[in-house]
Image (cartoon, rainbow, N blue to C red):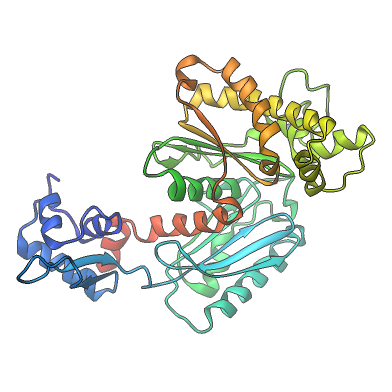
Length: 383
Ligand SMILES: [Zn+2]
């Protein structure tokens, strides 16, 4: 580092595990011993790090080890689904401390849902007053900087609502809101892949289709936060299906869970939920496998375009439909490896989500922690 590392930057080194002793900090930053001592004392005093004498003893005095104080605060989070919402408290490492799920219909609107969320967090907090920030994932397009819900068709009653000030009025901490698939992509990347790769495309196929893009290690949001809205890219030869957005043959209208159910019913199959479809796939039902595989091909068309544009190292398929992974991924692979460029697919992996349904709350916590524990935020708080 060419200028003197700040206290916030020293915290980043300890959080990431790059530095575990004072000597490490000195070596990485070039700071003098008194300067290191000053910054470490500041972080200790603020409860952001702990110092233990449990390093390996090599005779003489054991080295003091520094570690990030994950228990030094709490982050209430919620991942809103259309019908079901996951609510949790996480520690400062993003680990879930407590979790509860609520059946709420988001269409009840912010006046009903937000107070219910805040009451639930308060119940879980049980008097704790060390909340450092709050994170929310919502099934809608979000103008990230403002925390404004933009989508007009999903969560219609939320359109134009700016969520952070409503929550900050009660909790008085930074409140961050993002699209649900973005937070899931962040969670999946950080927990499963961060050590090995920086570029990931997460495609969520449930009732609807959406995507989150991790590029160069960070979420790609676009100018206003609408990046990754993959569901409304049209496919070829979709058969002329009218999408709820008004266009024809959007991938959402031909390859989503909703579309798979509709196509199976049109063939006279008695299926009422995606769980029914998953059971048929597991039983090896040929007709169901063919419908899911065709959905995979259409999905593959859109994914191949995204692969050409973004060159991810891995495409992760998540959401309820990922339960039908085999026929779905066969269809996706068939098209992606044919249509994408050779360089983009040379080492491309297509995998199933490993974090599963918990990725949303983990991602929400990480979104908040990256914000409140950033070097800049930590240094600003000291002033
Ligand atoms: Zn559409």
